[in-house]
Image (cartoon, rainbow, N blue to C red):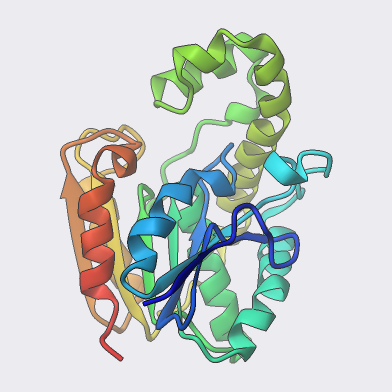
Length: 262
């Protein structure tokens, strides 16, 4: 199969496609976690493209090549903007699947729910990672209100911040607005979006979790099954919140296994 290098070329502002497939069988739309940009999934593209899956990484405003833009304020406006950006992908006929980790899992799921409400085409598979199901009602930590050093401590605790980055204050200054903005989005989701009716989607759902992840619980991961009438699979790994980095090869194999044969 022919591949082509796309570098950081973006189809519109909302996506980065690191590697093109000449004739993709699938497009996997990847939603980054809080504070991250499209580069979080760059390594995924080479592996999955050889299996005829083209990776389209969502690029939120306020980071990387969109650093000069203001972060989106409000979970619902972000969902709507991503949905608008998806229209060209829906139109070209290549089937879609979504992958999201942590905040990205909530966004991927909510975008799919809104597509369903509007009668638009759904992703064939929702891959949701590192996030409890909407039915889990524990009070989230309101991290975006924390002073700088306390926020950095919290990020380090959960594995979002390496010592190398923390020792670069200028880089931290660039990253913190997007990080605070994303945690504000999470707070908005928990206060508003998750309070309403959540539809049961007629698409396959595959959920991933870390067995030492302090942000998720086994029963709350399993509760994602309530939100699909399609096939459901749950896989867990012996890692913390960012198990997707340590076990990426296993996750790639699971994605390949779970995408239907065309």
